[in-house]
Image (cartoon, rainbow, N blue to C red; front, side, top):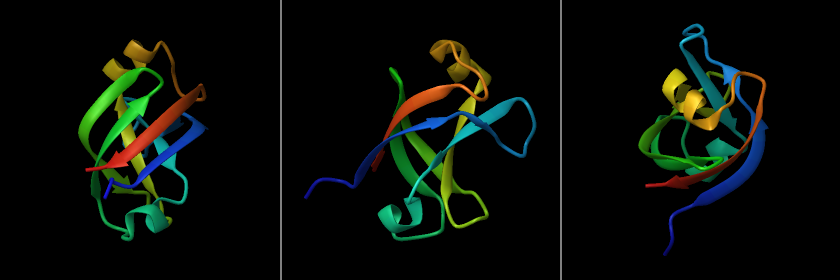
Length: 90
């Protein structure tokens, strides 16, 4: 059986930690993951692959994947820019 996977388009948002980190929210993540807790995932944001990262709870029932400044630089994008994301549960 293959791992649950979700592909979606979203914009890069700001995480509460400040301007060093940003994130992408995963729509329908609680249903996909079956939990409100942190889940280990592989994510592809545009053409940048993030392996074995934590999809963390947002506090509003969903999950998010953080994007560091280094990842945003690799993407050539910043907060508010659109990205295509694929998330696969590990």
